[in-house]
Image (cartoon, rainbow, N blue to C red; front, top):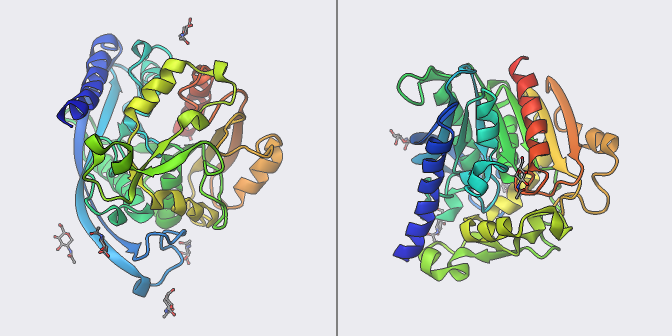
Amino acid sequence: MLLRTLSVLLLHLSSLYLHLGAASASCSCSSVIVPVHVDVLVPKDPTDVFGGLKSNETSQRRVNATYDIYGVFCQPNAGNEDVLQLLAHGFSYTSQYWSPPIEEFRNYSYTAFSCERGMPSLAVDLLAAGLSSRPANASDVQFPTSSAVLSQLAQQLKTAPILPGVRPFQKIIGIGHSLGSALFNFGAIVDGVQSPFDAMVLTSVLVSGPNDPPPGSGTSAIFIAARDADPLRWGALDPAYVTINGRTVFYPPDPTAYSPRMLIFDEFTKDVGPLNMALQLASSSIPAANYTGAVAKVVGAEDQVLCGADRCVDVEALTTAEQVVWPAAKSFEVLVLQGSGHDLNLDFRAGAAFETIFGLVTRFSAM
Ligand SMILES: *[C@@H]1O[C@H](CO)[C@@H](O)[C@H](O)[C@H]1NC(C)=O
Ligand SMILES: *[C@@H]1O[C@H](CO)[C@@H](O)[C@H](O)[C@H]1NC(C)=O
Ligand SMILES: *[C@@H]1O[C@H](CO)[C@@H](O)[C@H](O)[C@H]1NC(C)=O
Ligand SMILES: *[C@@H]1O[C@H](CO)[C@@H](O)[C@H](O)[C@H]1NC(C)=O
Ligand SMILES: *[C@@H]1O[C@H](CO)[C@@H](O)[C@H](O)[C@H]1NC(C)=O
């Protein structure tokens, strides 16, 4: 158990080392741990697909806790000091999704890509993932909790410096992948005009209805209790913490569209999350009626999780369907990336995905 824990830790550390070493000319990165206090109501029944948004208080209970949230903060030596990109990874990934330590960060690091272009970022481990706090009871980690962690963190970073010598940020853009995007979406529903996020770039997520099967089911992906998947590493966890086996579903169907080494890395560094997170994605069918920032969704045309049944072929129709839940957004658009899979950042089209995401960030930071 110790060895396995160490090897995972070492991947994190080597990631930091390479960041600091390779990127030092234009950019510096450091790991941070930020205590974040949340006080939220969660459904007593964690299988409530709306995450409590449609419940009254008799079916809810309170989670009032302070969690340590781990992140990697990257700052250009010269560049923007007012806008922060807050990066939130997807289910069973960690902050390493935004900067996987392979190929010396040349081809797959969005944090390096954006930092070299002058834009700071903070890539966090979601609550219960990676090096952030993992509550013993998985039912404490529901959409209201994890989403409030992101909103509270953003509020803090707008009022207090993340590191000595760094000014609080004036604008924060939430950039999510998959589950991370869905959590920003949930926050937009709950926070409305009070949202600390000035804009959102939501990658690899589409509206899912309460009766839709969880994304990935019907594919080779298998949700499996983490303690059964890897007893040495996760044997002590609440069985409601799960991971995903069969990860080719996150890549395009064409196996020459991504590196086999990336798949090995993905399998080796996969992480856990509570099973309810897959169910509560259905909360995205509720309109974010009072969210007034700019919103863009980015999906890969070859996304096996979301774009089956030609769903992503007619971009205009897709946009019309998705726009319904963002009635007050300053702007709304859907971009479909040809050739990209669910993990936009991890296949050979990653560079094109970075151009697209960064283009949106540039536009939104000027709004
Ligand atoms: C609260 O929700 C419960 C369960 O959904 C329901 O049975 C009850 O009637 C509701 N109470 C009120 C006052 O709406
Ligand atoms: C919520 O947590 C905070 C900080 O831990 C504590 O000061 C406060 O008393 C708690 N509130 C309730 C109602 O338990
Ligand atoms: C990484 O990117 C460079 C240039 O950007 C390219 O020449 C190289 O083939 C890429 N490596 C892989 C494994 O994709
Ligand atoms: C987790 O917390 C819920 C709500 O307090 C409780 O009903 C449940 O028994 C707890 N589960 C475990 C494994 O402790
Ligand atoms: C949006 O704001 C209006 C007016 O303040 C309020 O009545 C409504 O409940 C809010 N909607 C949501 C989904 O929070």
